[in-house]
Length: 299
Image (cartoon, rainbow, N blue to C red; front, side):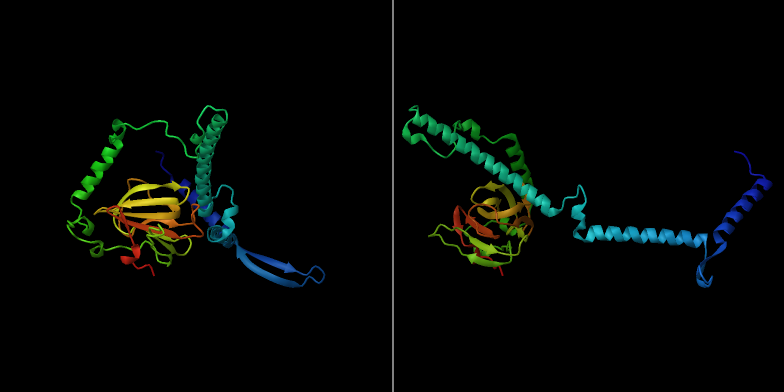
């Protein structure tokens, strides 16, 4: 590595001093009346001040543009940006398209069956709007698969040493002795009525409110049905099942373990049997429906 000789060092110092002097050299900006040559405005500045002001203005401009994009709806006009509402609409449109495709398949089967009836190839009472079962399940088909066995083993390991009130021995114990977390805070517009086969309650709440699990459990069903829309079912301890219907979005999948009070869905208006955004909640204890209002307060 070459050594810097004293003359070279002095020369470099002189160049640095000259650059610093240029940056600090004072200049005067003067505005003069073109007719009278009278001085109207003057300002003393140097190159360093101009550079610092330019950097500051650029920084402030960048912060302003960033704040406008982040805090205002203008970000929706940026190409390639998709907000949460757009994603939700796309997700709902995909589910509706899938449901319509299934309906068309069933309708095509019905029309084909009806043509066969009109041609005399099938008996008159064979036309049906339901899709026929082409394969009859055998006992071998009902044997749990590998994925099901792995899920059962994982849940058994998780529950082996879990200290939950709902997992304790409950010989002769009723639901009244259990603690339930209200899935939603709102107004109950339709109550439990076994005679009318309304096996749950309808709760109206604010739009996009989170639906929470009433107890810890495992998701055993999370999917779409034509009448109830997005439906999620939780299997709890002590032969207790909770059902959440008409959601706009499901936040959990089959096999997920959830805790009491954990968000599992978003209130919605999905399905044909609905007249507005609400949650239809059902509780089933040992295969029998029970009134959720007996064990929870929703206001």
